[in-house]
Length: 289
Ligand code: PAF
Image 1: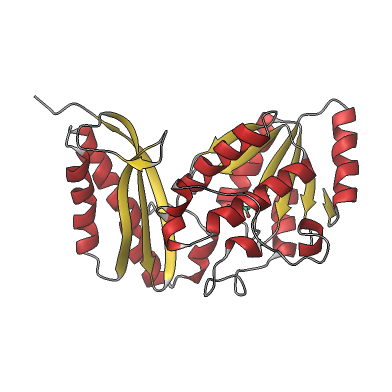
Image 2 (image 1 turned 90 degrees about the vertical axis):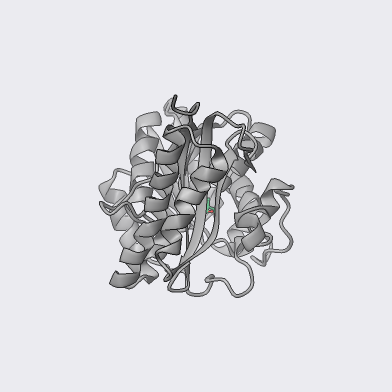
């Protein structure tokens, strides 16, 4: 495995791989890698012959007062873990490499639009513009055949799908399922901020998703399904629910009670000052007879 910091070194390695007829997969990350990220690398190597992982904590997608400065930076441990998963190249660029000439991210150059201002975008104004800007920039630099994203960030996947469809038509987008602890808690780099008891509290998030799923399977309309999830949060005051919604996966807009079919439950909650998100695909059935 090679660790490179510049686009020119990266370009050379990717060009060599392509010249050998290899299909190149790309996994963008901000480091602080956990098993969820490493599964993305496994999937990358199922989809392609050569895996590039980027590690870059993108200042442009953090708002004021968010955890940019304290976001864990663990390059050495990340590289060890990636090497063990047969990653080919780790691209860990400086901000100047990503945002030339001086590394100061100016304004985001991608626009996430109306959906980018809802849910995560409402809580984190400008987050999706910044995320799309860096993803666009990294896709230009890496020039992969396939890009792998985790389903845990469902709204991000929705946005990236649009970006790739509009500007990177030759790149295939592959979405990997969320990896969970046995408790149901979705793996996240931010879980490391939680104390053991907060970790237990945070399990309410996945429990609420399952409650919504259960109600949907019994044909309850969306608003009743959401209520089933809300009830679990009501019993867990240490978890502050920010939103729990059922959206149409094609539009990322809340569904009405008439909606039947595949939908996505999305949730964000704060536990011990740590914002956690999760989601689950559900099937809203016709009401039981
Ligand atoms: O999901 C993430 O870790 C980030 O949003 C990404 C895609 C690496 C862009 O900075």
